[in-house]
Image (cartoon, rainbow, N blue to C red; front, side, top):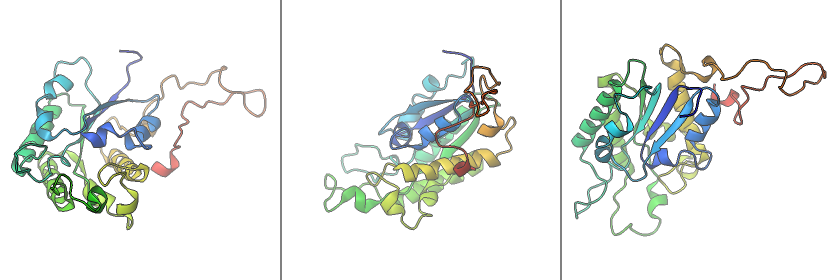
Length: 255
């Protein structure tokens, strides 16, 4: 591990997480906003469902780790919600099993530390027309927006029961009238516009949470943020400008 040790924010989930640095994704937005404040750690596994995730909880999140994450953002549900294939193969997980798997994940993560905060992302909506076009996918339409809704609501209900912060991605993406046209690269995965919605929802939860200490980027110390004579020279030619808190995206649009 390189130092100094920073707070860790872990993104854990399937392809929505793995691809969160693509297309100006929501993971890259968080990394930029938390530069020099927290390390955004990517643990995304394309194609995974909750059944596979629970098998590796102890490996990815060992309880005896010296340092535990300050925040863990979890996303599973989109693949679980696929309709079952006649062969019995594939990513589908029955609804009740999905709920219990997410309960296991939540219970494990809660046990890591009293200071570990958790946010669950629910199954997002999908654009079926974009996924399938004019033909069936291997003869089956397994991914439907309605099934995503059912699994999303189940995740949100579990989070209310377990007192875990949750984001309703299924509804959040559909707040835009043109969501089908602008939110997806392929009907499932997110464009830059779709990721902006996810990032704003995450930052809203962080801002409104009564967590102590706060995990808002503006409230966290900047590593080596003190003024320095080695900073860029200011317009007057006699002073320097501290640029330690500047980011590519800026902060105004995320407030």
